[in-house]
Length: 421
Image (cartoon, rainbow, N blue to C red; front, side):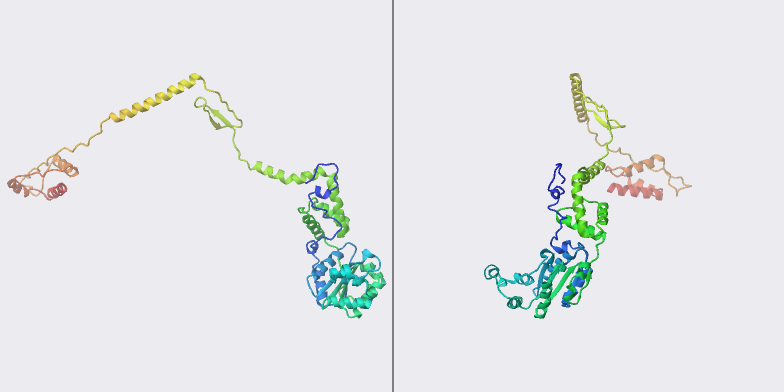
């Protein structure tokens, strides 16, 4: 988080980093910070599988020779059959005691602090002790900036192979310095790697990995346009590119503080704007009074018109009277309903069946009956109350049976069945 102080020494912490991600150092684990270099890694692997003796890794200063050599040391350390030794000849710039560098990791703590055999033995005895400590292991001698080696160092390396030591030598240098040196006398170059300059996407990935390793996010505090300008200015050299990024980060902190703060708080403002945009849309409301001191709010138009007042004593009394009147009306209505007698079902009146008229001799096959007779039969059939059968004299019944038509018989049978039920 950017501080508001006008004087800052710990610029990396002010930008939210846990340290300086753009320092001129090689950070570990190496594989995290080494970008691409797939072809070079395959060639180095093939070199050690084939057990070649000598190989070169050339490139311009800052192009990535050291980090690739450090990556190789880290990978070889995982195998017990190889004793890898990294030496940076540029640090000494004078005679390097290569034998001491080779034997020190193999000595015990007692030998390092008390007996110190590496300081007392002559060269022949020293080589015998080295072979004893190595046992079945071979030595991988990784020399960075090898063009700084002296002639004695070069003669020692050539003699170690003649003494029967299992040795593989890998050196780095610039193409110009390598041509000037005597490194070619060590042996035939079985590797011959010349490192290219990384692309812009690879350089951008280098910055992102460094920033995220120290607690940053993405390319912050840079934009892609800023990185492109610095990449061109550094002439595609990764070491110079990282230096420019460090200087630019400090400049951004000092000279562009306000711009950086806006960039840091931009996500927060966007979230607030999104929340406001998603808020529910409500219409303004207008009051329509329906009763004293209890207005109903209804949305109308574009303005809010709300008026609330306290009810007067007279209005309160009137409201109480209205409530009492309503209660009386309810009680009165309830009492009236109880006094009303329940209606009893009325029985259907008894209607006797009318005798059909006697037909004339000319038309004795047809029964004649009037409308009253028909209605009496229908009433009798639809009645639900029990009815006694109409008893006729037997003698008269027999006389009239020959004058009753088929229709009357059917109606009478239906009436008899209904009455029996």
